[in-house]
Length: 431
Ligand code: 4AD
Ligand code: MG
Image (cartoon, rainbow, N blue to C red; front, side, top):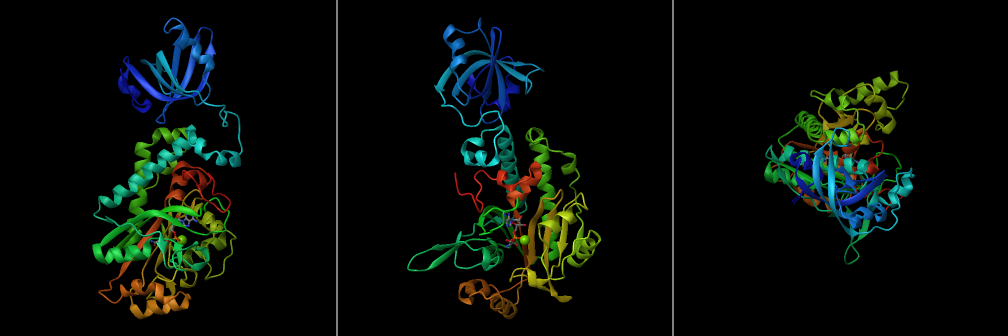
């Protein structure tokens, strides 16, 4: 008799095992008692007959409340009728803790209520499935870069400067009257890393004081940011598309059960194969005109326009060369048309919006200094960054992929707030 996890139960048919878990649900039918037991890796139905256990164990069924912690011993039996394909023929139950009346019951609850109980909601099978997919997405990303010789380079969270515009900076008090800002992106540090290691990636939480209440925005989200020396815009478009194909492939390969729980239409994901369409901002503007979405040349695309474009394709779409005026200070201008930035946004299909934003970086010293000034950024805080253009400056490029939007897309869930264990939004800092 040994402890096993429910996800591995198939390897223990006809053997006696012990499961350490919690009571998910229970019911009775005549002289038989059923316990749905979950252990975090799955749910299994336990069956208890009066003849198999002592009186005390049998009567425990009555007492057990939802989410009580129990250690259950029994024999594993394959049964096609059982949810999951296996049953546990119980011969012993040890009660570890009798749970108080559990706030989340099988009846319908509003999202606000569930989010207030996020610390418990994580136990539900849907939320469990989403966060398992997240874990796989993160691992797939790390493997992708590690296997290609990228060095992981962690960027600081406290920073002296803005990376993605001053309007979404979280400010905190540092020491001696100094201000620190929570990092909006590890990119600037990744650029220093690329010059030191050739190719690097940062992977960590990033912060945006976004007052947006959309289903795509969090104030704290996770981003992976590769940065490559001697790479141009095309090189990182190739990299981004290869990475996204890899992530989707890994999720399909290893998270079939979770996608089933989520009722995800996997045929949509199975079709995600390179090459992805690449269109310029100007072409995208034309396409939108046909769809009656009117945006002036020079404006960035919002969620609505992204949705229109994504709905015209089954694959992620890479839109490149936006007008520089609506993009960040560090992007290099297109030598063919100085009004354009050498940048790319990848728009996910099915209306999931922008999942990747990247660019070739301005590598010329004086041009970069001019950009910093034009964006009203304090050169003092960027001295180190500008330095990178003084000592062996090279063309280099990178991008950032938002983990939560990617997870939401994989899972087919409408809102990014369920794609992170404890979401932070304009209105939510608890739990
Ligand atoms: O397009 P963004 O702002 O790009 C950068 O931060 C660059 N410095 C990245 C780089 O080149 N190294 O953000 C990149 C991605 C977006 O495409 C989106 O997926 C995600 O980060 N993202 C958000 N996700 C959730 N909530 C928010 N408020 C987000 N803002 C950006
Ligand atoms: Mg962007």
